Length: 212
Ligand code: SAH
Picture 1 (cartoon, helix red, strand yellow):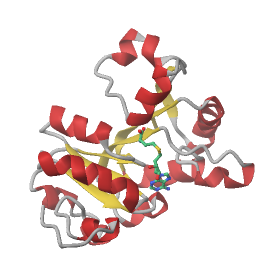
Picture 2: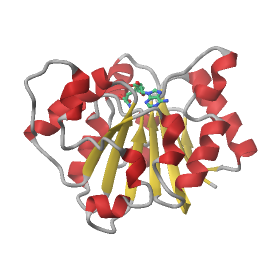
Picture 3: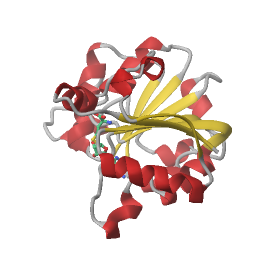
């Protein structure tokens, strides 16, 4: 990583080779960016990136992109990659509402949403990442049999997410209200930072896997 002599996270990110700085220019060209035809999986709201970095390490034949809104959070992911760069992982700092400007139709094979912000006020429902508004955006960028995996410890957010499925044209493939006690769905589970924090407090973790 090339670093200029600056301290702000925006500047550190601007100098980082693992961050795609003009993601709109990559729309329809992500396979060229990675230099291969492997499937592309993205995490929206990756936080400090523990989950997606671990997946990228475990699955060198899959390409990963971590998306995060805040520089101050993304920087922690970059710092982790500094010690161990991964050719199949890039980060983007962006607002997820812009997702269809960054990925073309059918360019993404799978989307991960982990411990998304709950936005508890009704008038903010559209901002929730599993809302129907977002499901329509995901519909635009996913391959026909593309999958969304969503985990949270927030009961109300999970209930909301379930209610959004039918109106948006999605259906459940797998679902649990206690992931950590569901042997089948725990197979290969990679814990996120929030998942470690909340499950260690004894909170059950909700998860669904959905398709159209
Ligand atoms: N996935 C991580 C972090 C969860 S916290 C984990 O499970 O540990 C939710 C993260 O999503 C925060 O870092 C927040 O900044 C980011 N986020 C929330 N809404 C977003 C949006 N609309 N676009 C991009 N990132 C978003």
